[in-house]
Amino acid sequence: MSDVIGRLLRDKGWNEDVSVGGVIGRWREVVGEQVADHCVPETFEDKVLVVRASSTAWATQVRLLVPTLLRRLAEEVGEGVVEEVKVLGPQGPGFGRGPRSVRGGRGPRDTWG
Image 1 (tube, rainbow, N blue to C red):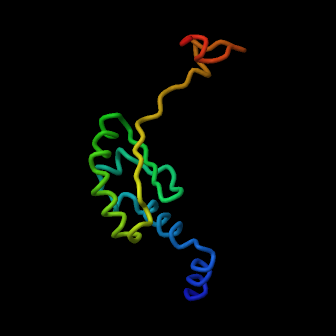
Image 2: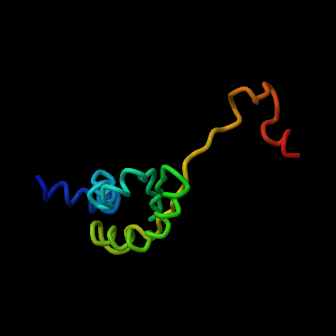
């Protein structure tokens, strides 16, 4: 059975995606407890792993750790599977709802010129 699944993954070109999916599933083991508490993977596409940090301070810290993280990912999934790690800060609130929103307005352009 494993030979058939291995051949299917190889034929369809899914090996890299499955490998990265395994790392995302084991994120805490790969990056460590402290980083995993404050940073989670969001997407993996075109050899770019996007992770989101819980605060701007953690985003800065993880950006400094990117070379180490790339080396660790290369050990786990193979060289060249993940070529870039983009670190995003926390997602802020939007202007679409809330006390300062305007129905039918053009959005932030009204305020910022």
